Length: 498
Image 1 (cartoon, one colour):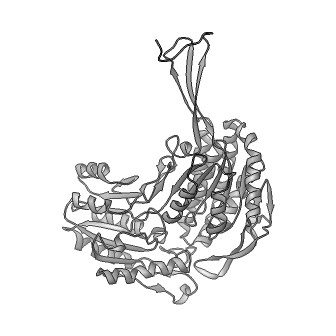
Image 2 (tube, one colour):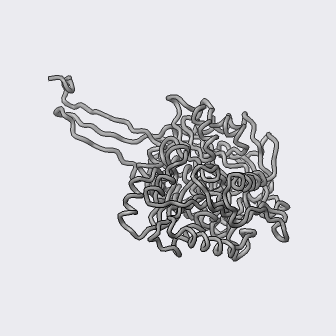
Image 3 (tube, rainbow, N blue to C red):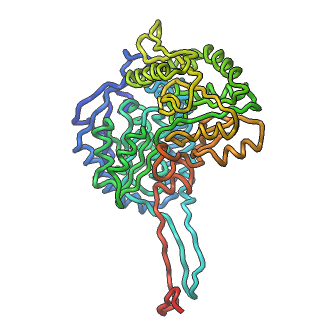
């Protein structure tokens, strides 16, 4: 029996699965809290020290391992993920709550990233350039940074760790990985697969625990050379401040308040599908969720009616049940937070079009379920139009023109993802130019990023370099460039000196 399939999870330090010396907390199925998925360690500072030390000790050997050889291990990990996709996808759904199709998609992202980054082992390119002096050449090449702390959230318990682990490893770094304490079993299974693929001891270390203690201690550890964090804006900004300085590379992928603009010439049926998927997919628990719909006044009433009717047909329940469209929220705190914004919206004068209640009847009584919620008559200044809620909660805002819609879209602290539905090519060109977001979709919702392009936003949505992608994304995050000048003239040559 492997460590991740037992009820008591273990840390993985220097090639060994070790029972934690700390306390344990319960990892519950959010669709059925009587189902305890695992008991999760709250690791001690000493265990974090041991994991960082193991990564430091393994770094030199891993750095000097040829990148194509590192890639071969990642290829094996990709194949193992493919073989285990169904069971791992079901574990993701059981532990996080998203419907099974999304749980399997979570694992597929990890598979895609593993194959892509394995190939980067033969593409870690630099440049060669001519020198201004004779008998001299110039080049750049990438080198790893050292030990990385990777801190990941609960909403994508396999995909987001893969977004960080695979590029960090292919670049030659070693890793201490701390997953969310809400979804540790899926993360532990990913670590097991990487170990099975042949990673040397100490290259990947796993420590469990909560963010306030274990995560912050790890991020600020003196032996850590870089931090990649995904989570809330408040936590990311705090960690960035704590890690500020010349010795740490820091990247934080954080929150969003993402808009879909729906123009009067849009295909409304297509826009409706995008709004449903963007707003209520993953129960709205994505940093890229479409929590704002900015609809042109000429089609506002029609579209709002379509949205209400379609949302009423969604099936709420356990994500492992076939035909369920929307699963639970991750825990009671997140459910209560989303419900609290219903009162905020009503107090601000918005109209509750649909939903707004917790669901506690029948098969839903032991889970954290909420009705998909729609507010109309929302103005851009309202809190429900400006603050990240992270639940099945959509605010519908009226706009009188493309310029007006773009101004509303940009008038928040976040800038992660955005979308526009229009059949006017000129309108789409203006939107992609003027929307202040890291990602823009045309006639598609705000979710659906592909792993070979950079991922990240502006404002309170992102700090530092982007995730995913290749040399303009994750590879940039996990490497630094070195410039080499070689003079074989046999004489002192002085650049820029006549």
